[in-house]
Amino acid sequence: MRMDWTLARIARLATITVVAALWVFAAVLLWRTTVPALHLTGLDPHRYFSSHELSKAVTYSRFTRWNWVLAQLASLATLAVLAWRAPGIVRGIGIGRIGKGVIIGMVTLVAVWFATVPFTLAQWLWDRHYGLVKGNLLAWWLPQLPTLATGAAFSALAIVLVMALAGRFPRRWWIPAAPVFAALALLFTFVGGYLSAVGTHAVHEPRLRAAVKPLARRAGAPGVAVRVNDVSSYTTEANAESVGLGPSRLVILDNTILRKPFTFAEIEVVLAHELTHQARNHIWKGVAWFALLALPGTLLIALATRRGGGVRQPGMIPLGLLVIAVLQLASLPLVNAVSRRYEAEADWGALRTTHDPAAARGLFRKLSTTSLQEPDPPFWDYVLLENHPTIAQRIQMANAWAARKR
Image: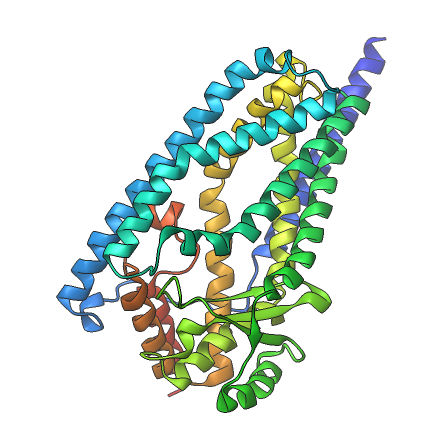
């Protein structure tokens, strides 16, 4: 009997060791990029920005950062209260176990949303004060509905699947749940490419339309469609994004980046940056990172809810959501570090595609002044909130690329 117990323990430790080694190996592969070792620190922002521009960005960013902190605290407090009260609440709901779980889960998410409304309103008023949003609050909020609806659908489906798995495998549900979550993320990312195209239109400007295919070919992403999203009715901020997988791959340019003060050469840098995301499979890699983090995440949820009967009990769903919220905050340094590496690779790819470091510098400077991004934010902001390299780092990369080509 003792020998059997020892062998079982050795087998378990060996399994954990192999899984951990494979996890680290996959993380190392995903971490790798094609950007050479560059020294991107030490840039003096005053070389590219006036004292007034820097002061304005600092003032704007300081409020935005602390508003975010307060919103996170409000979310965590709401989740904690519901995690405490939920077991008693679900006893009064007269439907099946999974139905109760979905209801209490949706109620929890709605409560969290309401808890953050004051901070969302404060941010909108702050943005309006600085001229970053236009129109009324409804006009700004309505375009976000598809994203909110997608998130709600993902959450509801995840709750159903988790509770079903926990009902079948009460103690080991987290093992099959991790790949199920990864598959869901893959599905929603794929479908999201098509959904993101809704409401957009083709590139109308002849010069830019003619430049799309040659840029895509040079960037290594031939065949990727480019569309335009009209956002100027509710914001002045300029942005672009890459979405979708396989046949749903798409680059979307906000129409605010297709007008002054941005030049045609700077727009080409933006387009080359987004096409590099597609060429380097950054969206695929993002799904892979989600899959890697899902396994330890589901394990921690299982451990946290085990005393109350696990997530097979509807009353444990808010506690599970609280654990997810805490894990999301705790993983921000890693998630942002990965994102910054991929964004840096996209910047480097844009430089290799356009061979125009001057346009890249101009683009980064204007992105800062039009969106009030602080060129060199505080370290804690950089770690927790910045999923792109800082504006100073991006300008320094353009300088480094130019120096290598002399």
